[in-house]
Image (tube, rainbow over all chains, first blue to last red):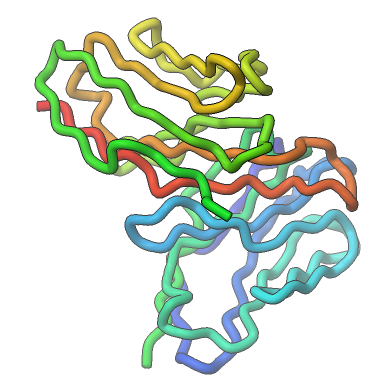
Length: 109
Length: 119
């Protein structure tokens, strides 16, 4: 599974877009980019995943660079409830997710 | 639809005792996973069941840990005897399919976790 690199922490004002970067330069052609988050005291929560194309769902958008070496998770209108640790994971599937240290996103009023 | 449920939510036991954690996956999910986070460390994979069979148990730390999934429904994770370093939060997750592809549901749903404290 691909090793990913994320900034340890980020801040975002409520209502603004939160853009969380992830580097995965060693990702292989068949590995997906998954994003999960963990809100304090809860279990990890799936957000979105993608392979090559950009993806969007009700929670977020995922922008993957053409060379697939990096991606950005976008929360279009961050709320206080989006404060969490966000994990970028490169994996063939969900059989064995390797969680790194993630990015601690703090959304402030 | 009920999510992944874990029991108990908290457990405090003494070193040397036995503890059994239970996980009820989402109904119909063949895949069941156990993960744990020990204090200050990252969330680590423990093992993966497909129905009642252990697909991958490469993350199990040692033979004090025993996971079962009789009948392919709920799963238990027993720690016997418990040691201080076993303290942490144990998460269970389940998924419908692990097929890699655009049309497959590859989302893993996690439970709230069991916080285990060994004193």
